Amino acid sequence: MISVVAYSLLEEMPEDLIFFVRIRGYSELLMMGLIFLSTIFWNLKIGIAVGIGLSLLRVIRHATRPRIQILGRVPGTIDQFENAEREPGHLEFFEGCLIVKIPEPLTFANTGSLRARLQRLERYGADKLHPSMPAVRRKEHNKNIIFDVHGVTSLDGAGAQVLRDIVRTYVRSGVHVIFCRTPREGSRVWQLLEDSGVVEMVGGREMFVGSVQEALALTDHEGEGSLVSRDGNVEAAV
Image 1 (spheres, rainbow, N blue to C red):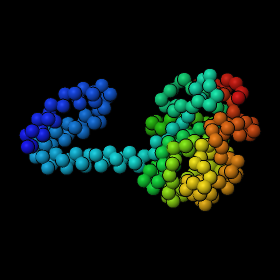
Image 2: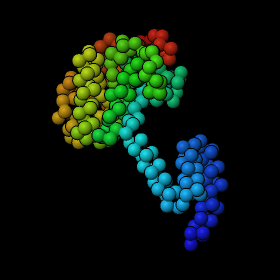
Image 3: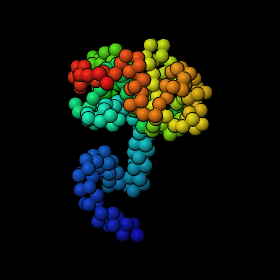
């Protein structure tokens, strides 16, 4: 029976290898290689244990790192925004504004590094640069922080606490905080935002709007909103 199963797996292996090479799934290929070598040089039980262990490590690593993004507007559009790290040099940015998208639920598991990653976005406009590098964004570029929280479909107490502390730090520093695409009023997420004091801190419900463009319009009332190019030069007023 084991021989039949092994033969069927080996029969499919070339096609699977070609697929992962084509999509550049190098982490999956590395994991398959380690499991295969563990099984060959030790035994089947060790190979299974290595596979389960590596899979758990990948899940934990994914769960504990919030996938926050900095957004820029697609040129020629009004309300189309994309991840700036995916489209470098092809997006419009706004003087005095940092648009941050949180595309996933915030829980105790992934909020531990949220504050540090936000600080990195403030300094560099990207999350992949090493924190020892000199800052490339000036503080005046972060007078307004817009949180696009459309992906935050759930929020627990620990996540609400971290978010409250982050918002409180911004407000005390004179930063204008706006939320957009927030879950509807009456939802668990909205209730936690109210109960934790986030809604009151940012200035009330009028600071929670339906789109990124509406949030940018609120910054216009504060005298901000000039377009800037990727190199930081002011181009035009919105």
